[in-house]
Image 1 (cartoon, rainbow, N blue to C red):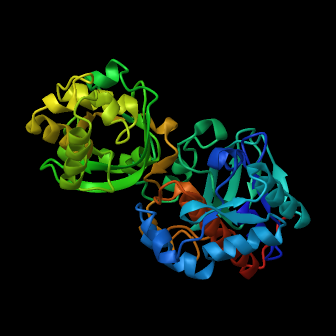
Image 2 (cartoon, helix red, strand yellow):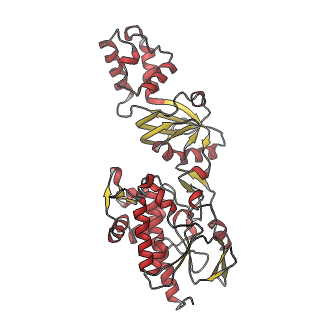
Image 3 (cartoon, rainbow, N blue to C red):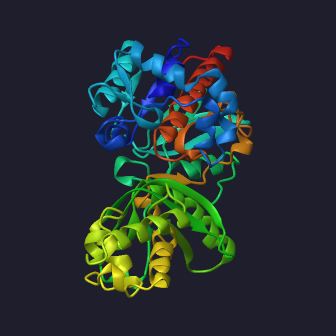
Length: 413
């Protein structure tokens, strides 16, 4: 939709072809149905939050930035508000209002829309785009084509990886696809027994450890234990590092470390726990320590350290307290993979950005061919970063596809 609008603003005849029955299905469910349109952090920070080739977007964001996205939607009548960590949402909390505004703009510009029209292939001729062939056999001649079909994640919205074959046919490299922003699986006994299933931990620090036990990445956010492993924002952000470490080492497992009290170092926490235990020597541990951790997690860690939750503070040896505190700060558990790519929020890998012109989103392999969004080998954390990448690359792809078609003097019948 973003590319269609930008191309039509160049005075071109634009046809938007979608295999689904309606436009913007993924956008309409994004941000829990509220649509995190973009993020207001400085551009350098945005790029840091796009660990998958975010630097490729430097040029694009200098031409059409996150602030430009905000202005774009406000001009379309979508009022936005800023929430935590710079996340921008529609004031009415409705993702559908964002989709509707884009469709209204397409209509104003006279963009033709064909839905329920799956594309079979893109035809190329003499080093350039020739036509788009639909599954029903219809052939649509085109001077420029923008491929904006997404990756392979959330396939029920239509992104089932169709575009990779069309890109390959044009000579493009598709880097290995893998799930990112995806829940992690674990075969730990406490996961299998569902001891902690459904337990959410707030503002913890979760790390992925390398083979030497050193943190590769740490994210301080929320997480949740599930029946298959772990999920929640901190886990999603760590997931790509788990995938990459498993691939690098060839091992079937990666160790994660969970710090449930990240605002205090281990010695401070030990002193605090000792103070509590000494001031309430006759109180059961599960009662005296309940302010430190959520009750279920507290009971779990006491049990892990062979401490009786009903035991009174005065009877607990110091070394046992130390081991309990160490667990609060560095509880380690193994994960053995992720849910499948179809269950991921974002696809890692895709059309190699080395083969894309960073200021225009034009193919370096085929004239008149443009790419945008998740089909490219670009992926960010959740929080408005992937949508920002999609909107910015969509804008530039459409703009330059329109200019390319205009420069040829070509116009469809």
